[in-house]
Length: 546
Ligand code: N01
Image 1 (tube, rainbow, N blue to C red):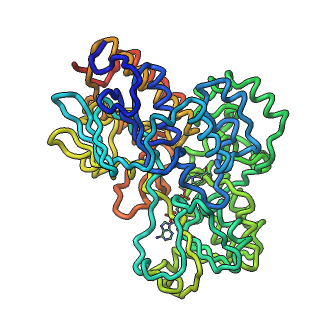
Image 2 (image 1 turned 135 degrees about the vertical axis):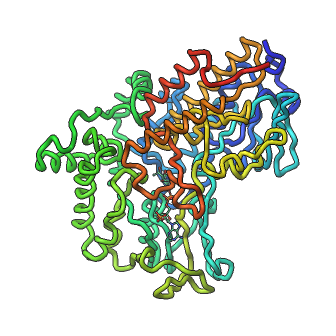
């Protein structure tokens, strides 16, 4: 057994005895604590928020809801937990999901190892002692052999660098930093900037409160009806009776979600009438995976994709009465599914309201905020409140904000200057003993996130166990393994239609961010097999040392 990984007695906040430091107290960080504890290892997590929950702690904007069904979007590691928990609706909303995460933290007594209100500022690995020293904005200095980055993929909110923002006399908000007390927009003149998943969920609700709502859309997004509904007790009972099998089956699917029969036909192999009927059925069913599963080739064949894209554009044209507005809302610059598909409740219908105006922020970009509102290249708008639904520095933002370094080598931010490089999305060459949960280069955001988190943390747990058995103290990927994996991630992306979109998957929403395809789109099932094979093959591509 290695010196650094002996089982030690519980000593609360005894920093010297830590086996691992976990950065983040969201779904990833909490599961990391649980898994490490099961292995007899002592860990402490640091969380910037005033409570656990990560994404679901911060994103409290009106209408915030998961687009994966609630019976799927939950931990699978404890069967009693999944049997006992009751989800009231088909899709969990933000307060319910946050309640669930708090329940898990209490039930598994995880809070005692989470230090809240504490942001990790730096992490430095000492090649002599094989230990990470982590510092926080509260003055903590802690050391441990392993560092587990559970920093989230969409955890660094970004407000565009608009001139004059400090002069605006009204209130402004970002969806990812929403006030805990909520915001009442009743009777206010409101401007919402951004029409991604957050904007699409929020706009119908704000429209009902506001005196007038202006939506500033730079890129039209495809959105499908969620068809949220109260949980059907028959479905719940059946799902729970099949839970163990369904969780196992999820590992065999591309998105980590079971229950959707994989498509068997290519779109162009059937008649136009058959396609129309299929898309209609999927539209009526609600949900994005089911729709993308209409045919085998929607994400790899442009001609096939065009049929699905046009179906949704026609739906928009049929819902929105003003055809000029409908054309503006109908996406034409990217194939459906290549940007994150939105799920909505009455999004397109909202544009039929008299108190809602869509502004084309592509043709007439916002140039500045003013004391009273904002100015585009064409007009000036007066607002009491402005909401930025402008997204995140996705996948790399949170990690690059921490000063992560090894000896005198480059920081992680410097190494990733041209785009992130990892081996399997799990580790970075040159940064030993640092694991990234659902890091860039893993399927992460292209899967059910909780399944991806559990798969990563289980793999990491097994890796630490293997190291302990071998008496090893240090692990990192070889540069060659990392290079090959990055090449593979790019090759797979290039074989699909994904790179055709200017999405946050390629960093396009952040000015100056290198255009690199970050998630792995080769499918969760194949990815998991690859991770398992790497472990079975003596941790192929990794170098372990004492
Ligand atoms: O952010 P986004 P989001 N001027 O980056 C626009 C997950 N999520 O918070 O596309 C004008 O998608 C920008 O325009 P463009 C989900 O994975 C999940 O909505 O860059 N507009 C875009 O319209 C999602 O994909 C759920 O041209 C500007 C918008 O702001 C991810 O989080 C719910 C602008 C940003 O859209 C991020 O979603 C919510 C500018 N200067 C989020 N800058 C569910 O589970 C940016 N924009 C349902």
